[in-house]
Length: 152
Length: 315
Image (tube, rainbow over all chains, first blue to last red; front, top):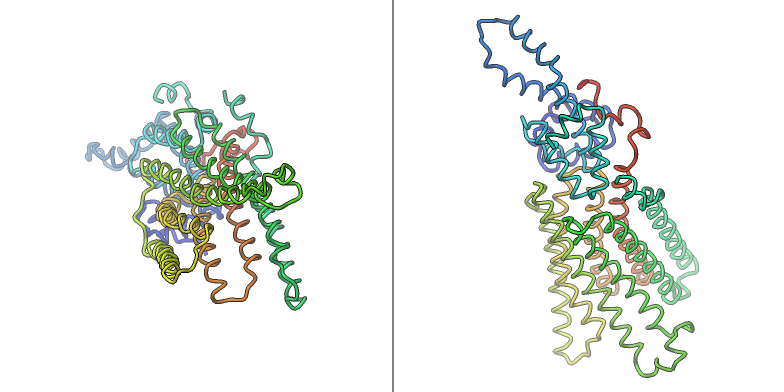
């Protein structure tokens, strides 16, 4: 049976109990549909947390101003790159460690650079430097590499 | 660097877990078939002599495989890498088991191919000493090496936040192993009080039991860390160590209980349990290698969505 969206959200936030987390993680390892749902939930959470940071905007601008700010944020290459990098890093952590490891490694609102550093350190330690470098190449391939290399 | 360092891993090593599980399946089928034949023949013949030797050979061979895989994994971690000492200790533990098997089966036996028999040293009691060395290497020494390696792994996992308090079930399993250890010591104490001679094998087995308690405690902590990770190949690698250690405790318990309460053939049970343990310990480095192979695989060989790693919603 597929876990409910609420159960996936609790799993994503690390708020499900140990037993339920284990069951959800086992199910996620087998079910592509639920993994997709989980990624969607995480992506939406990221967007919401980024949106909260922008909430300081002048409220007098009204809905049009909010929508325009969101559109600007979505179209900004830096934000899209960070979101893409975050998704790729989550995928790597899920692939080598497991779905539950993502919630251990990634704190809510964690910048993509910090997640990259933490995931790189983990891959270095557990996979060895050569395999970790290969995994990192896959993560950074096609991204604005100069920018991310500079931040590594 | 990617090409040169990972080239040595070999292409077939990524599939090592599957091969090892296939070996376990074949061996289990052979053992169960022997058990079926024994039952069908009305338990008319002894299976002690027929199964003991083959079991030890298969266990030694699997320990050899585990040693080789541990060495390959260890070579992938340069000196100074945090996990290298742990893999070195796991390699030493596998080596201790393999050496113990070789010593017990070849040099410590009355087998015709034993070179000591040709030179006449066997009469001098050397084979007895060799058997004792084999028992110590495959028992307390191996367990101590495993315990030290597990401690290093637990430290690293703690550093990365994979540290959870043990659950009641974990404490219960540990309690059973500790209780079993106390029972064994009490049994030996009572026997020595009545003037019964305690064999070297018993003393060696007893020496390993406190180490088994420590290992169970470590395995319990590692199990929680594995649950916190999920189901990837790296967590499967550590889960294999956890299973191997719990099975070691369970096998010790079963081997002690069976002669007391059951007429099941101990040789077959022991043979199955020892091969199962050796296989599970070999699976751990195999999963580690599978993870490394997976990372080394060029992105172009993966399906497009997986290669980019970007779910549609994030694009």
